[in-house]
Image (cartoon, rainbow, N blue to C red):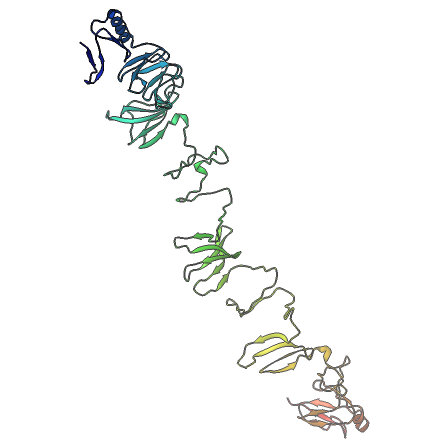
Length: 468
């Protein structure tokens, strides 16, 4: 009677007639009364014991069959289409070959564990090799100063703790080198001089305790200007913006630029802009711009190199006399030739004036638009007969020449010839020459305040009596 051979799931795999052997699978299956079944049975048992150990896979395998691949020294399982490694870790110095996804490999040189992804070996851990010693993050538990356990994450490099990451501030109960206290966040080992290097998007504080720069691009915190306190810089400050500089709690003082023009402004309404200096230990204010009036106040001596142009009035409020130390004051400089001089304000429409009349080439003075020439001594003459309308002066000998002379107090003396009259004090002699002398002679003429008596003079003498 034939045998029906079934698999574990009940599926018939083969039917074997009596006295025959079947090699449909990796084992020899024989029927009833098969001659020599003992050898075939024992060989089947050996194959099962060694898992068909061979350099080549068993022929006609069935799903679940195990084969030990002597090429890679791996135990493999047939999955219905091919033999796959059955798993388990290999410990060796070189990467295993013919690996399957999920295989583990212990690198015996570095004491590190890898898993095969199906295409490459991926390090599971630790992240450091045995030669590198402890490096990377290590989760630890320490006690704080009160003995309460706290979980921290320590960053090691070469078995040295470089930093600690903590969710809260901790004071370790047991001293930790470089970590007397642990801040909330990341704390660096203080004994290493550890620091952050690179680019950061923000920082809550800058350490200003040091001023030594590590390079031309890494600047110590103490070399930055403070915004919350008075500070000093040894370098120039450049504001690369036309908006310029703003000073004051209300931005009262500004220095701005527009189209290359610079403006210094006091922006608060009706407030002053003042410039002060230290004069011998005392603070003085030589220049003030008054905001309420727009006036400019100056204190102290002013030296101007160049021209001073004033379009308004000049006023000296502290003195009635203005003093000019220069030997000359020059008017109308650089202009076309026009009348120029002084104007003194009076009740007259044109005030009182003293000026040079360019049309007449002499000085004049007067008021109410009525001006007379100012005569120099050189412009006067002692010959009034020839030079009419000219101021008179006596000659070097005291003489004076006139066409006529009218004395309203004592009458008049008229002659067609020139006369020389010497006017003297009381008792002096007055001599009439030319036509008068030819008519009357050289008699003495008495000058006095009272009438002469008979003893004073002769018949025909002239007598001049002046008022007392």
